[in-house]
Length: 316
Image 1 (tube, rainbow, N blue to C red):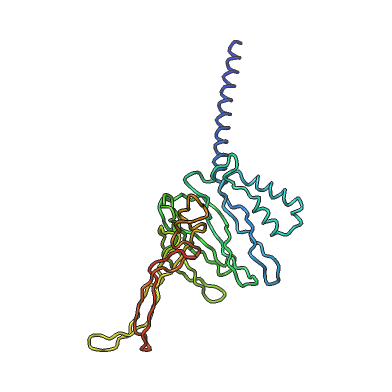
Image 2: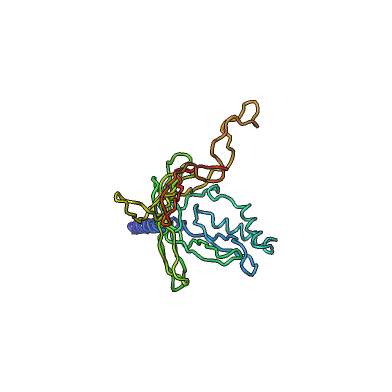
């Protein structure tokens, strides 16, 4: 009889340990699931214009969730707005109000990055829809899914899948490419496309040319990219015989954006309204700065000159 309490005690200890292990395992699984599910697509409706009938067109382009713990608060905020007087207002007014009242998810208490410190929540697939507006056909990129993508320490080209003519006989998935990874880059530099390629897809209207990113490099906000043109030219060999040939010229293009804001680098200590030193070339437009000329004889026997961009700068 004295052994009965001891057996009961041992049985209770065994049950307790088993229950604790199972509970801990379930909790761990639940935490892992939460971490995986945190990076996901959320609704993001934008107004893109009016259709040919004059009705407003709103499209849910989606957005990849950057921080955990924001969906409940965002949903309650939008539900509260839609249940008040904003329910009867136009969609555009509601979107404007939501944008004004929108809070940065990273500033919320207890908010953590959805993919951890070494990754970011990025689109895993994008669908390209074409919407007919009054101004004409407009392409809209719609995020379909999101995933955690490792942060790159150097500037590289990364895959970026885009689906064209979705749910039609002409559906095609293209790796359009994107530039990623500017961690530790000098101030004013970013990872941008410097070389492009193209691919053809079949459409109801014959074929369509899709531009893709082929190469990425660290560049300033305003930069030059190659842009090749071909021209027929006439030359003469050593024997004086006319030769028809094809000439390739990299005329270049200026891409990128220019930093907006004050161009003043140094102000007077006595009068802050007086600027002593202005930043040269700062403005809103990325335009050619220097160029070189290429002169040749055309097929018609006329002298032709083609200007090629060699550098770009920001200019107002």
